[in-house]
Length: 328
Ligand code: PEP
Ligand code: MG
Image 1 (spheres, rainbow, N blue to C red):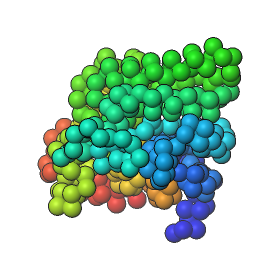
Image 2 (tube, rainbow, N blue to C red; image 1 turned 180 degrees about the vertical axis):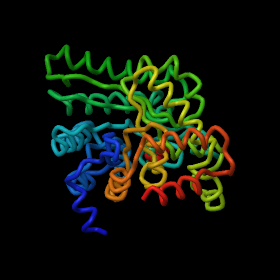
Image 3 (cartoon, protein in one colour; image 1 turned 135 degrees about the vertical axis):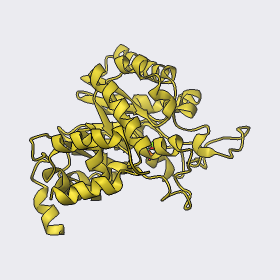
Image 4 (cartoon, rainbow, N blue to C red; image 1 turned 180 degrees about the horizontal axis):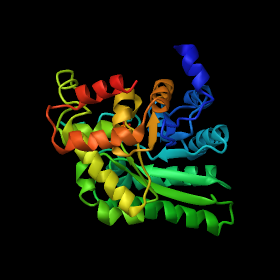
């Protein structure tokens, strides 16, 4: 099987009916960079910048951040890299960050984390913005913000980046060719505001790990709940279908970067909903590519529409698995 995936490395993820699926990897550390070439992925769809902060004994200074980002971009070459600004706070607390006076959190996943923290501790985000912009001199920077719940958070974060771009431009330093801004859809409330937000976005990325925990109000780390709510439940799939339709109407590219996309059957369902961009754990690239190359996406889309219109079970898993079996 390993040899089979090895051979797939050079082959593009194209479905039987000719749809090219973009398959990228999730990464976060310098050690992850070689996975790009090993897997033959199309790029890095989610670079979790907080990893550098989490493994460090002290706050990584701007120069150190910049070195990492530049090395990642150098290794990626022409392949796109999407940097996510720090998703720290909550259960990813930094020992060296002064949080004295901040409330203890009973529900850290729903707490003061990610963009909520970054907008308030803006010195942190400004340093990161400058590191990202300077590391991307002469190329395209793609940046996205985690845990956006309301459009204003995205607007503020983007304005903070733009202010740093202006600051650098005023000093006549080399700028990125362009900056592409995106938001992560992880908080269900944002889905209700997409008509307002999408026109302001260059792309949207769905974080299905947090999104499903908030949709079902089920802790993603709780062992008793891990199996209870299925990624292939009609509620999740219908939710995603609606978001995708809005993205299509607004002509904004949408990807999925949660772990859901790294499981072949789940990835198949996502393609059946109309997703054509996945960012997944490197080990899943081979299996997902193999699935893509044996899939008739158009036929699956039609079948999924029918199943989702009148779901007969709490999960579509049996139907999708049977369909996959029957179609080869
Ligand atoms: C997600 O929530 O799906 C996601 C990709 O972000 P993380 O797993 O880092 O929270
Ligand atoms: Mg998340």
